Every structure is written in C-alpha cells, then in structure tokens.
Picture 1 (tube, rainbow, N blue to C red):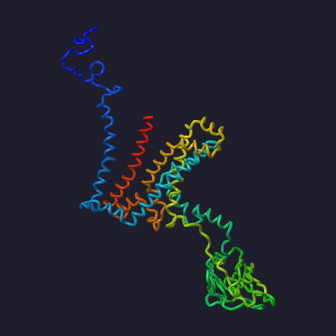
Picture 2 (picture 1 turned 90 degrees about the vertical axis):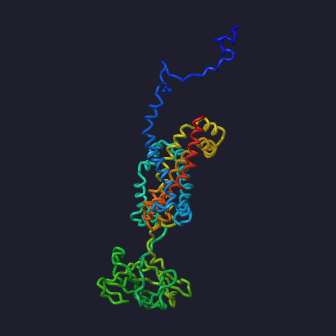
Picture 3 (picture 1 turned 135 degrees about the horizontal axis):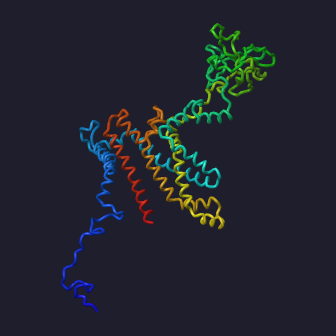
Length: 461
C-alpha cells in the first residue's frame, strides 16, 4: 500500500503547502480560447459595433428622455416631477391614458381570439392555405397605408365609404326613403309646421273642392326622372281632392299657389286627413300630383307627415366621438389578426393528434376538445401572441393619427400620439412629451420582463 505521506503517492506530503493551479492554457500552451476556438477579445471586437449602435440608438435616448422629463418646456429650468403631475392632471392626456387602457384590453384580445378561430377552422379545409394567405396579407401593408385605406372605408358619404355603403344598402332594403327630402310648404300658404317635422293645413277640407298643397325647396335636378306636369284635381262630390306639386317654374315667372305650365307634379307624397289628432284617411299623390281622399276626410285637416321630407339616410358616423376608437381598433384587428393566426397555426401543428383523437373516442364533442385540450395546449403560444400585441398597441400612433379626423382626434387620442402632439405637434413642450415617453417605457417594461422570464423558463425545459 502506498504511503500517503510520500510524494507522488496520491496525496500531498504532510505539512506541504497546497498546490495553486496555474492559468488554463490552450493546446500547446497558448492563450485560452472559447469552445469554438475564438479568443474572447476577438468575440468582443465583433460585438463592439452592435454594442455601440445599441448604446447610441437605445440606451442614450432612454437616459436622455428621463433627464429631459425633469426640465421645463425650454429645457433650461429644472422642474423635477412637475411634468409628470401635468400628465396626470391634464384632461386631454387622461383621455389618452384611458384610450390606451381600452386598446391594451380590447385589441390584443380580439385579434388573438380571431387568430385562434381562423387557425382552428382553416386546419380542416382544403383551401386553408389560401385563406391564411388572404388574412395574413394586411401585414404586408404599412400602418400609414392601412390608415389611409380605413379613412376611406369609414367615410361618411356612402358613395365613397364602403362601411356606410353597406349600412345604407341594408337600411334601404327594409326602410323606404323619403320622397322629397328637404321640401317645405310655400311661405304664406295654408300649410304650417307641426310637431315631428310634419306640415298641417290651417283650414279643414271639404268635399267638392280641391285642396291644393304647394311645396318648394326641391332643386329641379333632384326631381325624379320623368316627373310630369302637375294637373289640377277635378272636384268630386263624394271625395276630397287636391294636387301636390312643386310651386316653382324655372325662371321664376309662375304665380304662387297656382299650377302654372312647367311646374312639376310631386308623385308619391303621403297625404293624411286628421281629426282630433287621429288619422281618419290617407292617400298618396299620383304621377300627375293629384290625390283623392274619401268623404270621411271632410272636416279634417290635411297633413303631410315628416316621412315625406326626412333627409336621406347616410349611414353611421363611424369617426364620430363615440365610435372613433372602436373603429380604429377594428382596423388594427384587420391588420394583426393574420399575425396571430400564423403563430397559433404553427403552435397547433405541434399539438399531439393522439390526444385529440383519444378525447373524441372517449365521447367528447368538438367544442369540448377545443376548450379542454386544444386551448390549454396552445396556452404558451397564446401568451406569446397576447404579450406581443400588448407591447405593440402601447406604441400605437399611425392609425390614430391618420384615421381620426381633426374634430374627433382628441376623443381617439393615445399616449404615443399625445407624446408627438405635446413635443412637436403644436404643444412645443418637450418636457411633458418626455414625461409621457418615460411613462410609456414604464408601461412596456413589466410586459417585457414577464415575456423574458417566460422565455427563459421554456429554455430550461
């Protein structure tokens, strides 16, 4: 057995000083190298340009923005946290904060939900790839171009705005338009305005006489094509008759209240006979403008209801104060639902089909398979999509700036837009703008930290 006290016997000599390992050298006694055989200084040299750019384009702007937020509008006077107090006391900026909260909650949720639905449904159809391509295509469009597109889509004029063209078409399918929007009685005539936009005669009708109802306020080019010459109604002993016509002749040579040659009949006008507030009879004017009411209309006042004169339905004010934010969010979802669909479809491709088939064999229906198996297995992917979109919407600027018209831009305001407006868009207060930038950074940081930790956890699995 070797004596442990002897040199070289597997242990050091008794009382001998411990051996200090020398520097680790590479093969042949050269300097230490990385696992790829590259010296550390050479790796640092290659990283240096990226680090310089990162510092110049990211680190320095962040530090300077924090520093600038502590100074006044001119940048010469130190004001401490006063700019942050302005941010949380200004009504317009608080509106931006509220809208940002709506964006963060609604836009990522809706886009992710639609992406999930599209990914699951297109998995089972032969044309799923083509559908995915169409849905993902808006991602190839810049925010600027998408904003211009949806500014036209939401245009109030149905002849230009696609959204209102659809709404007006559906509305007109189930509701008839007014015959002559904007028409009104001739001044000093027997008709007077009454409640609800209707016009009622001051006198009462009688059988055997003609109760003419002259109207004005209709441009000649707005008359129906083929409008006929107005004709006086023939009196009838057992009915109330009259004529509804445009009491105006081109050139202005006609006499008020008289049916002159060249004055056009107004066909399709509804005439009601009203007694004690109740309609006892009604009729519509014919192509020559004449109408006939039964003898029960004798002694009643004649009323032209407001339905004859209501303005043409022009659809919904999509960019009005109440709908401008939801409308812009819809345009964002149109762009980013394809992004969510592609990521979720990639995750769905990795779901074990055995689990799905086993659940179906055990009697689960498709909804139960989707809710109990597909969604839980896709949870990591759904979190990635949600977090990515949340970071994205916190910085939303282009769509709001382009789509929202000037009169309702304050209603659709968000923090990134307010940062621009406060700093460069008329506010000329870069102190407040920098404070908004710092707040945006603080809002994004927690989401980024959660995402980084999640990625590290998945990397250790």
